[in-house]
Length: 171
Image 1 (cartoon, rainbow, N blue to C red):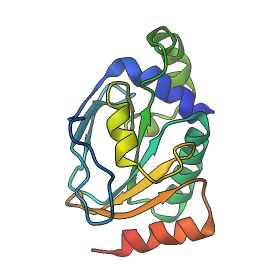
Image 2: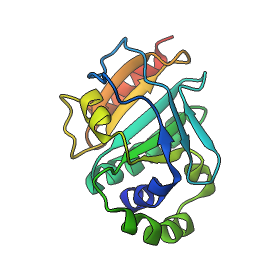
Image 3: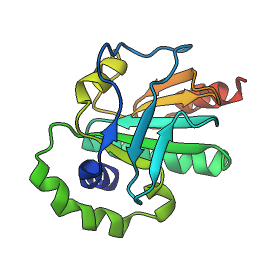
Image 4: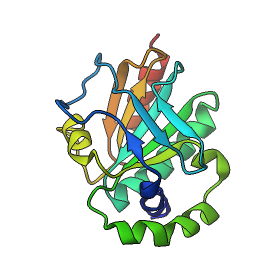
């Protein structure tokens, strides 16, 4: 719940990217450029020239998934930064402002720097995650150039984690 709620609060912070012509992302595709105001007030830019894991969430359950993926990745891959994009285009604007203070209060600053909310480009992100179970987090593993090396959807499982580990090992 905490991840979903923190995403709602950041919605007012904004995000920019092109929604036109969005298609499903597959391994080998280039991840779309994203520039967003992070929850800590800084800027989140993807891809950023480093291997990263990007978790895209659409629901409260996906927020729980994202938190679990973040914890597992931080334990086993401390050098790999994980970023969260929370898609909340359907959440009323009035709720976003009310939740902002609670979110910042309950989130570590390091996670705030790597978390942003999408409120305008939800349809494009749904298209990019086509085929995934959108009730859970969609995890994209990116290489340093921004190429998608792996895609997993759902809660943390050993099989899913093995896919992410293998994708992170690719150059």
